Amino acid sequence: MLKVKTFLAESPFVDPRINLAIEEHLLSHLSSHSVILYLWQNEHTVVIGRNQNAWKECRTSLLSEEKGTLVRRLSGGGAVYHDLGNLNFTFLASHLSYDFIRHIKVLVAAFRSIGIPASFSGRNDIFVENRKVSGNAFYQGKAGRYHHGTILIDVDIDQMVRYLQPPAAKLKAKGIDSVKSRVANLKEFNTSLSIDVVKKAIKASFLEEYGGEGENISLSDIMEKEEVKTLYKKYSNPSWIYGLSPDFDVEIENRFDWGHVALGFHVREGSVSQCHIYSDAMDGDLIASLAPFLKGVPLQGDVLAKALRRNFPESMPQEVQEMAYWLEKDWADMF
Image: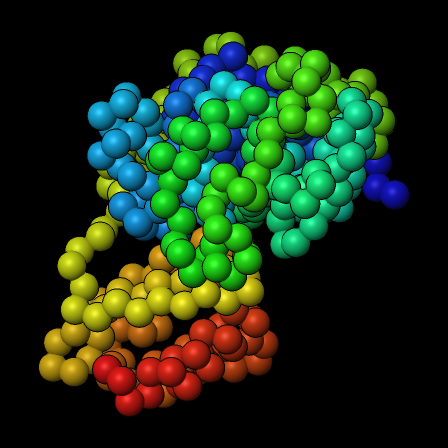
């Protein structure tokens, strides 16, 4: 097994814009054969995935009225609510050192060491007694990749439900009636738990899995770095947070096994003049790359499907195959 150098970083901040800026900074400066465990918390925050529509995933007005913060992250996946009963983790690793299965082993072993019978299930979740306690998302940069996620320890679930509004199709697909019915706090299974106890368990499990002593990265003065200041401005910028959400001429959506997809079209003289694709799919880069392929294409499902396929002549990702089939089958004559 490849020997790697291990690092530990723990944010003293609870502002999501700072924490996301730090995360991106750490990713950009990864050394080869290294793995960083970064632990962080956000206060009263909704975080949406890279390709999501803010207004459809979050009750933005309510969140703003109640002094909450809305941010958009780099990774794909769905919207999540953070308060100080939640702990966030990020495993950042160079390309050669990245190993998602080892990251999951660290988390599951940590939970079990504090009396939580956790198991990994589905495409990106950790469950206890069939209820989700941790969700995960992913991003790939030039220097390496990260896998990050949430751990519900003592989160205000009622607040979570108030601010998040996942598509009904997503809930139906999972065979559940509400957000509240499918998630749980770790404290439900071990009432003596605290954030600090969980942090210590994860750090110990990380060092046991990877070895080494885990060199500490000080983040106390990191906001003085110009790069981090610039990243903070990016994550604070409304154009990054909200993106474009115009009134589309045509909107269609579907739920696949790998995620929810909504396509919005502006149409001029029967062809697509502008397209935007919203999704909670894990492969954020792939989804973000698809919209330009549909620009200028006649608004006919079978023609749109051909345009998608044409751009993947050798190896077509499953997501593209299924989207093309859906457009061809359900929308050939319905625009």
